[in-house]
Image (cartoon, rainbow, N blue to C red; front, side):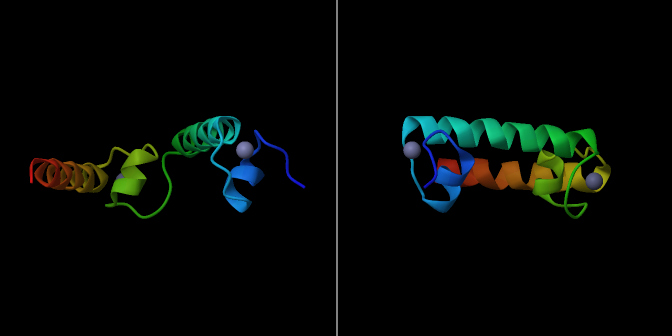
Length: 76
Ligand SMILES: [Zn+2]
Ligand SMILES: [Zn+2]
């Protein structure tokens, strides 16, 4: 059995208690830091790649496009 406060409990057992959410958040933060350290992850020209640390022209454009859309949706 997985214990609370672990990523496995959050991911595999879908527990959303405070401890498991905190463990998942810490894990995601760590992952992002790792991706950023290597210059991003995924395809260039995607918001995901931008979020993981790439700031090339393609990724910036994808990010801008996404935030524009997000703002539009929020207004609607
Ligand atoms: Zn839990
Ligand atoms: Zn890029």
